[in-house]
Every structure is written in C-alpha cells, then in structure tokens.
Length: 467
Ligand SMILES: Cc1ncc(COP(=O)(O)O)c(C=O)c1O
Ligand SMILES: N[C@@H](CCCC[NH3+])C(=O)O
Image (cartoon, rainbow, N blue to C red; front, top):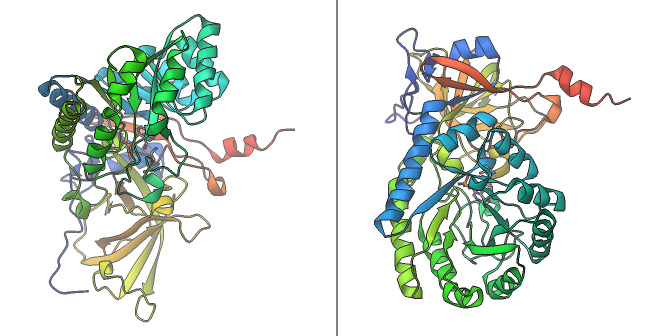
C-alpha cells in the first residue's frame, strides 16, 4: 500500500457509529449504549441488529427541534413526521411519539404497527401509490390525520370510504415538482417519469375534484424529491414551484391553503469519508425555512404550516449490525484490472465473509451503497488491510462493505460492527437462501432488550409446510 497513509483501523468514528459508541478499556471491545458487542452476540446470537435507543431519541429530538425551531423563526410552525418505512417496530413508534414526532406510514401493515404502538391516529399520515380500498377504509375508520392522495383514482376511493364511515378526511395531494434530485436514480422520486405523485400541472383539476367531495378536506400539496440527498437546491426549487400554485389552488378551495409538506430525504454519512459532505440538520432546517419564507413572498401568499418526513436521518446512524467472521480469503489485485484509485494502492484485497449479507442489508446490492466496518470484539496492533466484507448468499453482489480497511489479522470468529445500518436494513431484509431475519436489540444505559424478534430456520421451514 502507499506509505504516507496510516489509517487508524481501530478508531470508532462517532460521525457514523452511534454517538457514545466507544471501545471499552477491557481488550478494546466495542460498547454500544454501554453494552459490550460481545455480550450482545453471546446473548442474542449473530448476526444482530443493534439500535442505540438514546441516540435514536436524541437524533429525533434534534431533528424535530431544528425543523420546528427554524419554521417558527420565519413565522410559521412545522410538523415532523417520522417516515416509518426506514425502520418500524412498536417500540420505535413509541419513542418517536414520545419525542414529539408524528408518524408517516405507507401501507396497511405500517398503519397496524403504529396503531398497536398507541400512536394517536391524528398524528398519522398515510402514503402509498397503490393503497387498496381496504387499506383506505381502515385508515379512514381509524381516523388518521391525513391521507396523501397519489392518483386520480384515489380521490373517489377515499371519498367513498369517508361516506361509508360518515367521516371527513384531511387529504394532501402528492405532486411531482419535476425536480431532479441528485442522488442514485432509484432514490429520486420527483422527476416526471416515475410512479409517485401527479404532475404539478394537474393539481388545479385534482383539487377541484377533491373539494367537490364533502367528505374530503384539502390541506395542501406534498412533494418528496428523493432520498439520501446532500444538497438543498432540489428542495428550494420544489418549494418555489409548489407554492407558486398556491394562489390558484386557494381560489379553487375558497380559502388559503394551510399546509405544505416537503417530504424527507435528508442524507447521512455512511462512511467517515462522507462525513464532511453530509448536511447538518441545523443547516438544512435553516435553509429550508428561508427557502419557504422567500418562496411564499414570491408567490404572494401567507407562509403555510410546514411538514417534513425524515426517515433515514432519524434512525440511520443509531443502528449497528454485528456479524461474525466465518472465512477470509486473499485476492491478488495485480493483473485483475482492479485499479480503482479508491483501492488506495493496495495490491491485495482481503475478502471477509460474514454470517449475514444481502438478506439483512440489501442496500449495497440495490444502490452500491458503501458502509464502514470495525472489528468489535478486540483492538489490534496489526497494520491495515484492504477489505471487502461479503455475505453468505449465492450472489457475487452479496456485499456488505464494498471497501474499507481493517487490521490485517481479522480472522474467523471475530465480531464485526457495520455502522449506520439503522435505516432501510431491517426494513428491506429478506429470507433469501432461507436465512432467518436477525432480531433487533435496543441498548440503553448498559441494558439490552429485544424489540423485534428474529426468525429461526424452523419457522421458515414451517411456512412451506402447508399440507
Ligand atoms: C413520501 C416519502 N416520505 C418520506 C420518505 C423518507 O425518506 P428518507 O428516509 O430519505 O428521509 C420517503 C422515502 O424516500 C418517501 O417516499
Ligand atoms: N430504500 C431506500 C430509500 C427509499 C426511501 C423510500 N422512498 C434506501 O435504502 O436508501
């Protein structure tokens, strides 16, 4: 490898690991929420999702305070919905509500969990581009705060459900602002040629249709431009375009449109290298408030009440996945064509196979997302090796960490901790190769408790014995 770099391959970087995660004095074992990683795997097995409860709660509070505080500074207020698709369990829904967030759900299943957690239905926003009639009926019956309309067909469906339930339902209309968010193509959601929302130019006709139904109360437009976004320009342009239509929409409804929902999508650092680029929530909140204030002046309207739907930024960094190393394998890179400068001049790559993989973290396979890894059961005085952490599945794209550096003596039996796996990992997990889903363990003040049960191979077998 190049001589001038000496990475600290034992360092626990709190810009990607949960705040407060550190190595204990005894053999340098990683502690999360005051609990040793080795105790966690001994008690609950491996692999394991670990969630630092206090870090999650603190992040939720910070995001809520930043977005609300900045909205208040410019003369309005904001509701912060936690986008539960990032990671939902009964416990997490309770934490979010206790920390002053509302909950965004995107399916009947997520709705069920939120209601089971005791979330006040009025705090729930219900999303989805293909909500079934039954799901809509359940949401209306439950009295959810808002349903976000995603297509023309849904207007009549929601109206029918309100008539059947004898209720009035607050609705938002999801529109595509036409903004092309700079993120992975599969994470951009407001350009025209994709499945979410309606063209902004259709909004007047749709709002006319909405207000023709007595059971529907139109409260504003919704836009979500994408996910894992680092720059605020997309939000600026979206807010400007959406608010630009508010005068016309107010004429249709006969009253000022009260709300604007700008969605979520705030990016986080998955690796220390990204830490310098990832936006700070305080900066995003200030910029978004200024953007909406300026766009409202430009549009000649009163500032609407704002709503946001962060998911990843609330829970991403507070989650860690623990794995056990099964095998290692050295690959000589010379002559392989693997000359990626990001390989840092190494001539050898160490493949480190762990006991999970794309079934517990699909994101590297889906989006080529990179992650950061450290040995959790010990420190090492060995120099660095270029590693790729791979899973146990039958796919060469079954990668957990595309590229990182670990002590060269990483070996079978070591526990690895992969950082920032709190969002869209458990949520996107699968049973590929009949691998059971790991449990989710919450840690706090030195205590660990299971908040989502894992599966066993026997349970998976039983699902396929139907006779
Ligand atoms: C409508 C909507 N709101 C909120 C979110 C949450 O996004 P993120 O987790 O990137 O904040 C998503 C997912 O991209 C979404 O589709
Ligand atoms: N699942 C994606 C984000 C999609 C967000 C939901 N619209 C991810 O892991 O980054």
